[in-house]
Amino acid sequence: MGTSLLKTLSVFLSIGLISGIAQSKLKSFELTPEWEAKITELAPDQPTAKPLKERNVLIFSLTTGFKHWCIPHTDAVVTLLGKKTGAYQSTVSTDIEVFKLDNLKKYDAVVLNNTCPDRKDRDTFRDVLINKMSQFGTKYKDVPLEEREALAKQSYENLVQYVSEGGGLVLLHGAITSFNNSEEFSALAGGSFDYHPPQQEVILTPTDDTHPLLLPFEGKPFTHIDEPYILKNAYSQFNFRPLLEMETTNLKDKRLKKLPSLPRYVAWIKPYNEGRVFFCSPSHNAQSFE
Image 1 (cartoon, rainbow, N blue to C red):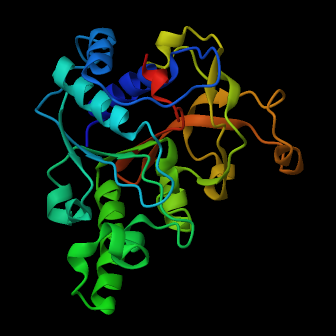
Image 2: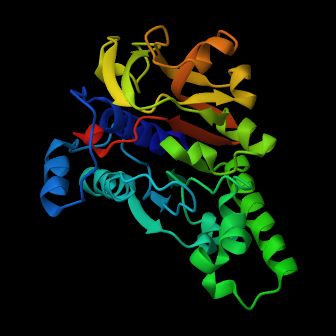
């Protein structure tokens, strides 16, 4: 995959997800046409880089564990950004059938939108096909367990192969937990979820004011209300290009003092073999798009 689409997604999602300055603890609200119209008005009119060909983006938004209330808002925003700028066309799905390899190859990038799995296996595909089949995978009820085990494994391998061979992957907030017990996925994503303290004011600082993804911030720190994600496993290797660093000295988090003293980044870009990955922890709250 060329880098122009992922850069476009990264710029727009970074701006949309983290430019708002929160005033107080944020409450959930329903997605409405009025709110969507407001975001459409705020969104850019043109992409940062004009795509050389028509781009297609798959937005996968199934969560089998904790359900972030901002999921429908994020679906809407990613879709309208592509539509308004002409940078890409979007397909939104909650069906794991989209992870068949032939289908994945239709897309230039896959966006995993808060795809949090259940805590048991920390594996979205196993939840659908095994752990929570009665809730999320009823159409597989007549498929033998052995076949469902194989399908869960194959769906995961298809996603990794897709990225490895040149696909783009965007991980938004809770999406980094999708296969949280997999060392391979940790290496692909740049880290694994460890925990987060309660929502609070977080100070974020752009790491490089000359990078195209960070130009809108003009190198200035800003305050944001969010769940401050603390990451583990492959994260400590810092095998990525950081975009936003979280200030930790003022965090209300007793556990962090017992962990190794490390820079705590909440957004980055990285290669994975021939593919590209963009992780953006902000935000738990749809107000951030405003």
